[in-house]
Picture 1 (cartoon, helix red, strand yellow):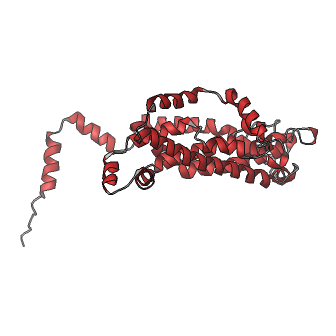
Picture 2 (cartoon, rainbow, N blue to C red):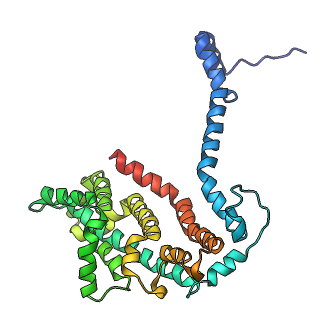
Picture 3 (cartoon, rainbow, N blue to C red):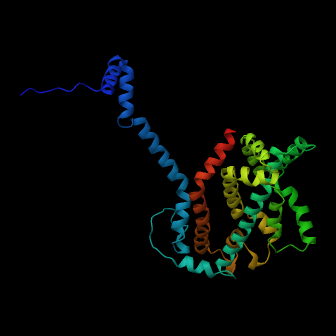
Length: 310
């Protein structure tokens, strides 16, 4: 019986020929790249992990301290449990004049109002600067960018006088109304850069179909602005959720407190600082920020990268 030897396929011949004519140094480089990662890469990842753990240490210590008795929090700077207690969470939830759920609801209302206000007003202002033609457009755009450099402390006094005369102190209106009037120039600039990267041919095709600016904005521009809108929503959520100064100015009644003011109130409760309950409620307040960043990270990176690339 004779054995038949199959001829090598064309792809095998091509690979063999390429390997035969390849420079030995290039062959070693490809073999190294296809094999296990080099020591430099392993060391780089180890360093990044250690730096990440170092940056996360305060948060880990906060979580661990929220599960310790108050008298042991500052005696042990480590993150190893000597005793495990959840009483701080139950005490912190009910220590203040109102349950902590009231402050959570207040913060949610303020945050939702600010997000909706920024998304609607800033997107409309950005469309006007990016697509419309009107007198003094460049000058108004420069004025808008100049407001980014104004610190909040410069305008807080005249704003407080205005809202006080309107009787809006101890309401959420002073915190939400400026967002509805597109006062966050950073988000306007972010969306303007994004809209300028959208081809104008889409607008011209829509005009041929009889669309005006409102329909072009709603049906063409807005669906393409999802990364920029998501970035605006995430930043607005984080900044508003953590805002302390503005809320301290306008909200003085305990039942109107938001989370930052409620956490500050723990330092005056019972004429002493309740560190354990305060740390416990701080952990509770961090959970929404963690979840928003976790699920919105993809849109956040996409929005910033796309806007920067335009």
